[in-house]
Length: 178
Image 1 (tube, one colour):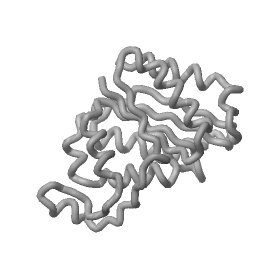
Image 2 (spheres, one colour; image 1 turned 180 degrees about the vertical axis):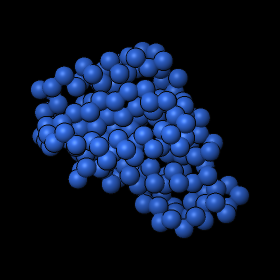
Image 3 (cartoon, rainbow, N blue to C red; image 1 turned 90 degrees about the vertical axis):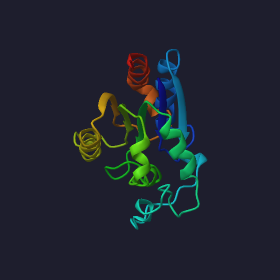
Image 4 (cartoon, rainbow, N blue to C red; image 1 turned 60 degrees about the vertical axis):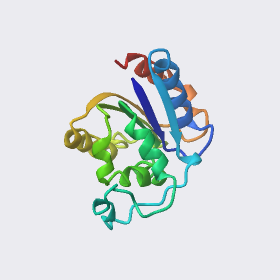
């Protein structure tokens, strides 16, 4: 299986990156895994003009790196969304990529399953609720299988995730992918 991970942390070496690395370690023995780190791409936000629906090739008029990401998503069987939690949502940079999938090109994707990896500083029980709601709506709309979730709270500073069981959970999630 070809797994693409959209890693939405703008902070190199942070908790999200560590969780992604653990997932990759677990999944890469059986699958091809590629991490798309938002730090490596320049993506403009979607402006909702819908001009992509009118073009024969469904291309966006914006000249940024999204064409490369579309190409990678076309080859994916599975998509993993990994993000820090900022004000009860995913990072703005990752949200821009997801919003740019409001494009008919998404109909060419072969993605059949997804997973979710989130890490936040707060310890409120509702910390992940809004993201999970959006995630579950996407699962339903696109008829995708949820392959698992790693949700980690109480991790504000780099390496805080090492004080939890989450790295093992991310590794095991990667290993469990069929």
